[in-house]
Length: 427
Image (cartoon, rainbow, N blue to C red; front, top):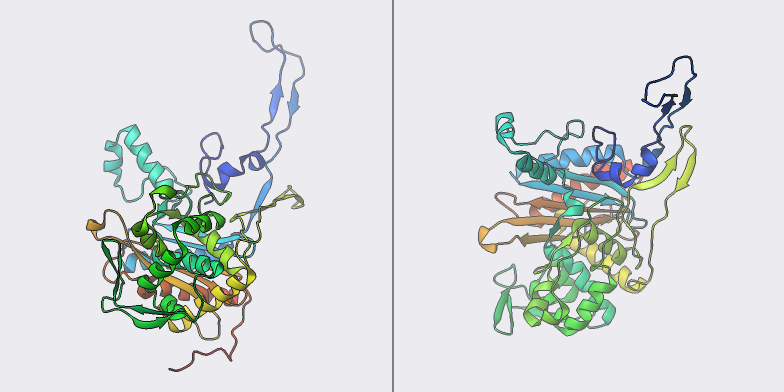
């Protein structure tokens, strides 16, 4: 995220590249007089132009939160023998990023040393091979890579369907464990089915047939319209280089089967930061915000010389739909599939996901959880993504507890006190 500079002090990746014009300063010069052959003339005074130091970039990242999140990411990667872990924390009201962690991580002070590669192996690599490995190592997975979001995307499907009025919170559904769409039998994660359930229970249970049903009610055309309205087809504009775009079907190629699988977050890919920004808009009252790190520029005396402004767009969804989604997602944590993220005394909302990577035959999974707090007035949104965990791989079982650990520690640090009257109702 911070990035580093090369031998000439020019930014190579991260914020060092993005804010190069503010950070680099101006080189000094010594002006001398020479003859026609370029030889300095003795006895002629030199002129000096003193160098100007670069300015200071103040960012929104909280050092203590970043350090703690880094430790949590490394811990779960080791425990689950995962290929990697990404965690993103941001303010869903204004887009300020508090922490962005990707592990395994390279050393910013030694950025040309390949991680996980022995020195003898590295020495045997061609220049091109080594550069390719370095480029891969330097990638910021939260920004540069896309993934199938899986069931966390149900937040978006539910919001669109509530906003359009094709479903209400009291609608009744029946889940036999699958849904037939055209010639396909698309299964629920619960093989025996969830039986009779309301829409809210369908979200709590993360029931695929419920979401396929409401998605088919909405229809492919309107679904695509909301995809665009929620910003999912455009870049977030985050102030880091190399943001990847969404990989999506062409509108005309979306049949009933494609629509059905898209409702629960499969058959398309988005970036983590895009997902975080869109969910932020759906829970903050309908304002699309720009995720960012840069806050202001300071001079050498610490005085503000420039404050960055970021795009906002209101009316993404109605305040009413946003409030309904906050309530439903809080119930997912208090009594549904996200219960492992529950913290007594805090109102937490969230959604779990477990998605299978391509090719499906490889049996590799991505476990994730998106959570926010306080649920009635979200001030912090967090995403945990675990790549290819070994053993138990369900998002509710392994990603939600990581978010709970993080929230338990950072919410008091950020000034959010527990409410002793908030307790989970015994069932």
